[in-house]
Image 1 (cartoon, rainbow, N blue to C red):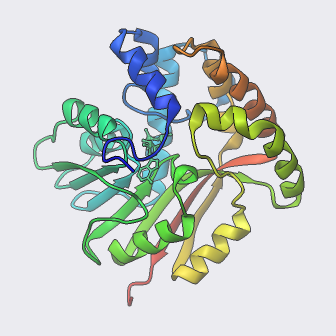
Image 2: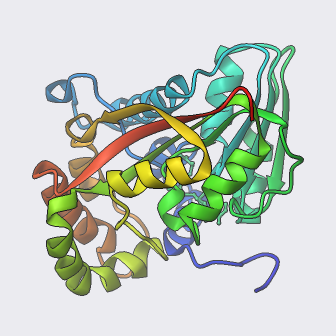
Length: 283
Ligand SMILES: C[S@@+](CC[C@H](N)C(=O)[O-])C[C@H]1O[C@@H](n2cnc3c(N)ncnc32)[C@H](O)[C@@H]1O
């Protein structure tokens, strides 16, 4: 494993090349947040890049609200991308100690450039693996993982690490693509045909973890579930947006992946969930 490129994330290669070429639509959609959008009323999505950027910001807010983000906290954002979630927290709260962690140093460099601490806040961006957190036990009030846990080598190790670094009573909040339990065999079949296309564009992705798996993992780790919110239908306008964007790819891998993903989302074969958990106050 090289220090700079420990895992393959082809879509970040394409994004960074688009940024370098000054593709203003891609920069507006993914220069800060790299995740789906959330529309309170999806019928009002207008297909513009500004509307998408606002929806992406809204999704981040939904995740950290599920984790009870508030003034004065020490917050860790795992898989922090280009710093969008840290930037949003920095804009809205005070007296924060914010730490963004990412496995890809190119993303960390961009995050450091574009997100500066406001007033009483402190911000640090650290290169590292979400499954081996380089932080002390009991040192954060809130741990976040916005649309990235499916890339991690192990959800179990990430939950254990999040639990370890959280203070007693601290919270973990994530969002993830979660398959419907009863439809797992169908998803297995679809993966056989669709995985190489998805992996060629997104790199390693594991979308086989069900809500029951999450409940069991939380129990085994010592977490109590707090929020389980299905926002699948609120994210649907993301897909036409993805299809319309011309990323610098050799073929339209983004568009093809978006067609499959829209289909499985509309049918709720795979749901988009916001999940949060609390560590016991007596741990
Ligand atoms: C879809 S992007 C989401 C980025 C960011 N959370 C956001 O919402 O804008 C997935 C992120 O997970 C990061 N990532 C993947 N595997 C990781 C790991 N093992 N540890 C830390 N970050 C990881 C990627 O580098 C990428 O930034």
